Amino acid sequence: MYRPSGETLSLTPEQTAHARQLLKRTVDGEVESPTDIVDSWEEPTGTIDWERKEDLFPEEESFITLSAIADSVSSPSRLEKPRIKKILVCLLEEEFEVQNTAPPKLRKCGDCFYVTDDGHHRSMVARAIGLNELYAKYEIVSPELLIQPDRWTTQLRKMILMRAFLLH
Image (cartoon, rainbow, N blue to C red; front, side, top):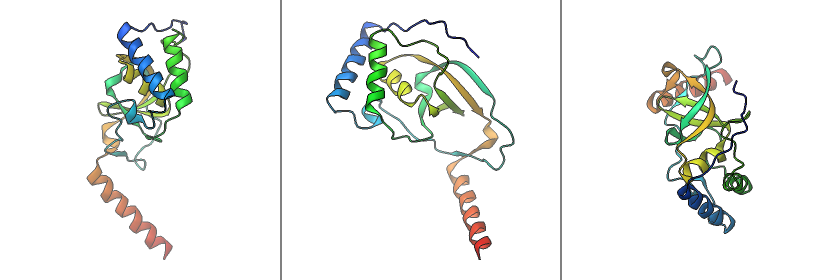
């Protein structure tokens, strides 16, 4: 595990302008959903075959390109304005740590990353103001555990039928 150095992020003039603009929009009530902050925030197209998962997913920590973070797997439409404001103020006052002991937690599925239980707002804000990367901790889902929508629908139907059969 990484030990934080205490190094804080310095924004470029362009990133500072984006951060100030987003802070103003948030304070003025113009930000109501994640897509008011970032252009796209899309849910995963597939799911994980939890029945075949045998162990914990392998984990890594590193800098992630923000354009690879697609969405959140839990509460994709969640937006807490006070958290957005706090993150923006930390960034503008150069108090946002480059790496810290509680980095955003992501799940890597194929080429995309999805926020799991921590880092939703930090990831959105970082993308919105034009940061290139964000330090994160992430679990890696092996491709054979990913179920695409057509296969997922078939599996869901089987599960529903099995449950109906067991209840009767």
